[in-house]
Length: 224
Image (spheres, rainbow, N blue to C red):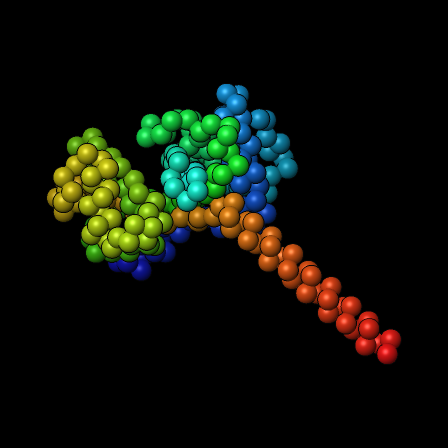
């Protein structure tokens, strides 16, 4: 499989800004409930945008003051995207075995990031994997690990470093990705978070203020 073919076939599903905002709200509500020790609140599915009703795997990543605080995913590609996000958000808050459960005192400092995954595609040539674009799954001998696409650039890794890190995460030798019986899968992801939405809202507010200022100037000019 060529890099170009891998790029096309692993594309994540398109999700509108409205859909992204809905998923972030659902994730935040689920996190709040999990911290409180409650079940996820009921979801009015009929009110959700159509694009989040489509099936897609998803991960939810939590960061506190810029540091990783939890990251869990749901890989059931037959489940609606919103449902995978709700479940992953709960687990990221209280079930990530690397961290203690998030406490209510931390909630205001948490940034929430969602990764909606495209389909997993078998990779025949590791050279086709592009660090920063592709996420990867390594499978061998009953061991399996996944790295999201954003992990490589966050750590300054190239393709070899990313593949080696994924093997280490799976409990395999770091060069196991070179073995003939190791299975490699690639995917891409649509990644967005609360910080992105806040920035988008700020830009929208600035645009609205600029438009209002221009309208006021036009009105003043017309009255002179």
